[in-house]
Image (cartoon, rainbow, N blue to C red):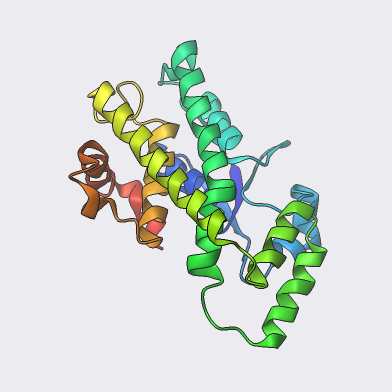
Length: 240
């Protein structure tokens, strides 16, 4: 059985959680608490993912540590009735879309999430020092440097402006794809990895006060898409 190492509020984890639920695949959860920095401090998890990032999937002897690659692995191994991965042009388009979402997430969604959510409150000097010490220990040096930068309040207005512009571009791209496809899905005639990515994306945008419900005049197809996916059982994974 699949074991997913995840944190329920992690953007990358949420993509896999929603997809597993959507496709009805049995799996076992191994929760990695980011608030307790278990991804940094847990030596056992470092054996699974040496860079200390989440999610990670373990299926027998197979270990995969990238959200898009995890979704593709699940699709190919467990979704035998789907013809998506026998259509090379469609599967390539879905792959490219999901990889572009990774670039949207890191750095842009990450910047806004840290500045507006995770690091928005007032913290004591003791807590700041604790977080900086953990950042220095992070096995992924780039991620550790970003955490330290966020703790010190050094995310710049220019970075925030670029992140907001990237979100606007992502919404425009979704709107065009939904308008062109006319099936109600991002690609093809069925719910794919791309729809999962967009579901999680719009949910996070809402937490960042970019509420698609209030932008339905500008993005009508995207707003309608989000209303539909919120009715799916898999959406409950985002509300835990």
